Amino acid sequence: MMKMYNMYGMNEDMFKPEYTLTLNANHPLVKYVLEHHEGETTAMICQQLYDLAVLSNTQLSPESMTKFIARSNDIMMRLTK
Image 1 (cartoon, rainbow, N blue to C red):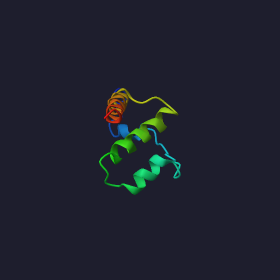
Image 2: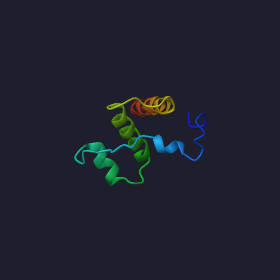
Image 3: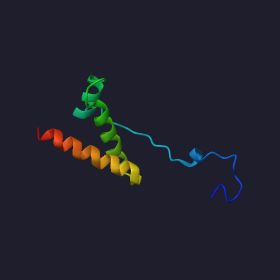
Image 4: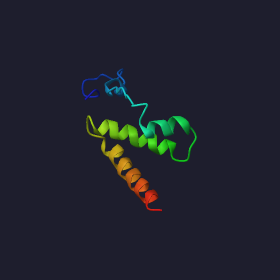
């Protein structure tokens, strides 16, 4: 749309929504992340927590939803071992 109206000077990132993520510091997963900064699964847990927070308020983009589903499957497979 910006190209149609010759608005080339504008950055597409200007229209991306901003989020404020508030976490319960007493939740066991949040405590785990705080105590295991460089743990094997810490990044995965952080991504999953973020996606779950976004899902509770809006839809994920198709790309984010694909990653969320793959990560959820990975977590479930780890639980079966």
